[in-house]
Image (cartoon, rainbow, N blue to C red; front, side):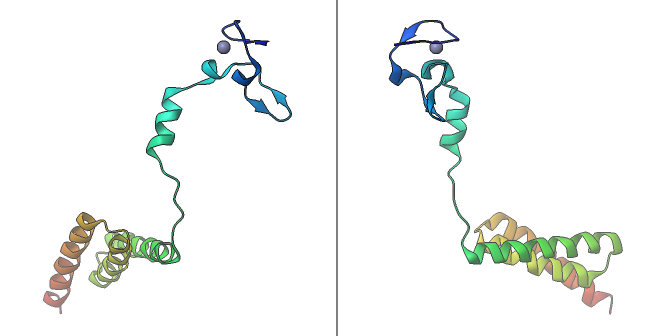
Length: 116
Ligand SMILES: [Zn+2]
């Protein structure tokens, strides 16, 4: 039996987490945080596959091109940027963003051919 330092009630040893070779001073029911529990429940830990990691890097490169394009209004930069970002969002299956990038790509391609 131990005494909790928060609720100061006596509880059996298993109610205190064993941490770094000794039992904690606060009991499990006092340490319980429903918000932490909810966040852990909602976020599933997931490793990225090599393809996803590669496409993520290409996506960052595309973002760089898009940023450069927005400052220079150069259609070629936009076209390269949209192509790179499309790779990332289609690997991630974010189809709304694929539609968005395709729209930008066609618009800037048309703009590019009109300016020739
Ligand atoms: Zn307690």
